[in-house]
Amino acid sequence: MLREWILLKTAENMRLESFIGKATLAVDTAGRTNFPKEFRKALSEENEGQVVVTISEGRTLALYPLSEWNRYIQYLDSLGRGPDVSKFRTRITAMAKLSTLDAQNRIALTGEQMAYADIQGEVTFVGDGKRVRLWAPARYASEIETVTPDEEVRFANWF
Image 1 (cartoon, rainbow, N blue to C red):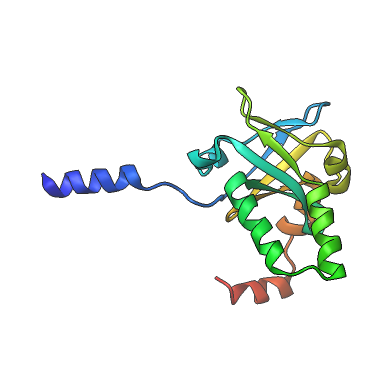
Image 2 (cartoon, rainbow, N blue to C red):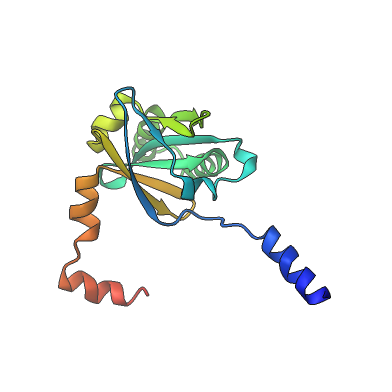
């Protein structure tokens, strides 16, 4: 009986702490899209539904829970203030937008963000640990779902 109670309590306290999986959803003409249900499970209560979306590598967008965004800004601060870092930081923060999930669990993307990532009509959300990458579905299909034999060999070392 005690063992079962301990297992139950442990299961209650455990929660997914990283974003995994993918989902492709519609984007309306105002730039709003639903935040996928499976990703909402990993968004901790401390963030109160607040996320930051900004530009990322490979002409994609990155969505950070507010607490992770604050840690990311601290990391950028630790890089110093040379011209390259300053330009990078300015690009990242200028293209950033704070969103709070609304009653329909939607976030809003700016026109600039959508143009940068070539997102039109649909967006593919991809879990990436502490953040979520947002891809144009066609770019995701061509760059990630397609793997060359050489890549298969290189990737085998990382499993």
